[in-house]
Image (cartoon, rainbow, N blue to C red; front, top):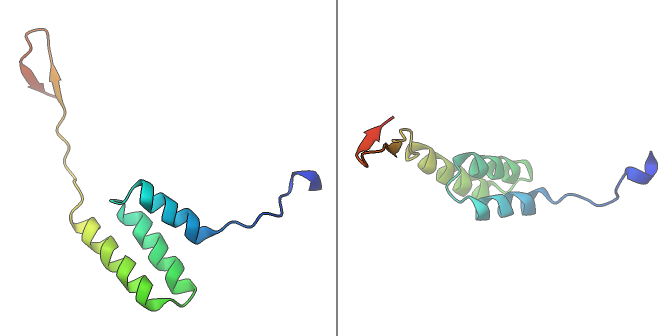
Length: 78
């Protein structure tokens, strides 16, 4: 079983940075990074990310309208 273990360390901050780069509108990712910064005692960076998380959370789109087209090409709400 030891041959399957890796000695490679996971850099959690880099993983969070990459996830935020891929999806900069996710309030949850900013919250996770804020928690990580707080854990390593980087309070200023933690506050910045927490503020960004709260801003995105307040402005998230919560209603999605799906429009489909039938055989008459008239828009129909689903």
